[in-house]
Length: 247
Image (cartoon, rainbow, N blue to C red; front, side, top):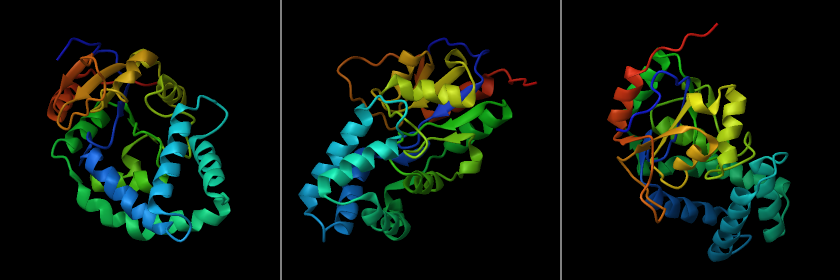
């Protein structure tokens, strides 16, 4: 692991899928899309649904308007494309996350070292953020969080499409988090397995830890990170930190 500012961290931002949660996102997403498309089959074909969903998601991810939350951007674009308003489709979405999404738990399981990371962070009095990409509604994120063995109460902030204005890999996503938790970027450590999405935190001034258990390498260049290693190595690093003293 490369040398970092181990005495200066006051916050740990940590990714969910492939990091705290043992889940292969590249296998999970097709299963998720297949299940969700069936909910909309009376309105449009599977292929049209997936095409419109991807395009609305792309626009949401690329948007840089600090006054519009991700949820607003997504539904405006998606509803426009399928000729429905949010009031019409919300019951379909709610029913899916309530009755169908739980069946996808077979794709995720508890990571054996996740609990140690969270417990050590708490022992060191770090601000703890579940910094999962907020392209999903809270209903989907909180269920996947439960699959990892945690609850929202384990974190000071959980990012969702309802409460964030930016998405990874936009550095503004990380800047927004640091503003919410009132912690300077240079005192924050971002840990995750995605070389594109998670390491972009460095552009916002955060140190990074590349978690290699389920490494998702989606860039052409060799990843550059303050630290890199397995999740168990992150636990060791957090345990070695100086406790944060707050007034």
